[in-house]
Image (cartoon, rainbow, N blue to C red; front, side, top):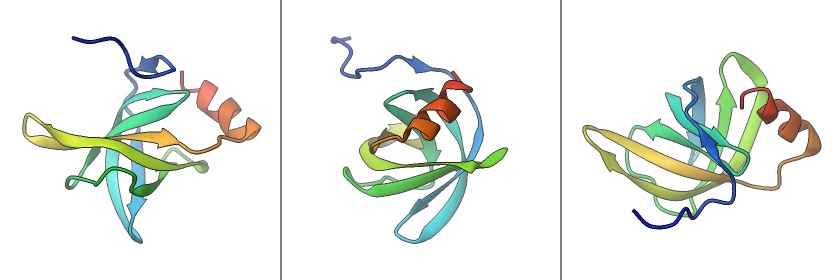
Length: 99
């Protein structure tokens, strides 16, 4: 395996989420979360740089916006990795509660 490309450590955290892509909302679960982004299950492959919004179901006030950096199939499910766009101070604090 090559060197780590992420700037932040990811933590294996499984939380129910909803994610919105192209004005369609889907239910899913996170795979891992870090201060720079999130990996989550998807219904289909998502093209790189697809704008995406993620809401934590147990805390609907926690909303993250970003772009898909990678999407692929792992075993029998699709996954995507999203890079957060410009987290606010409040979003950083909200995110820290989960890490």
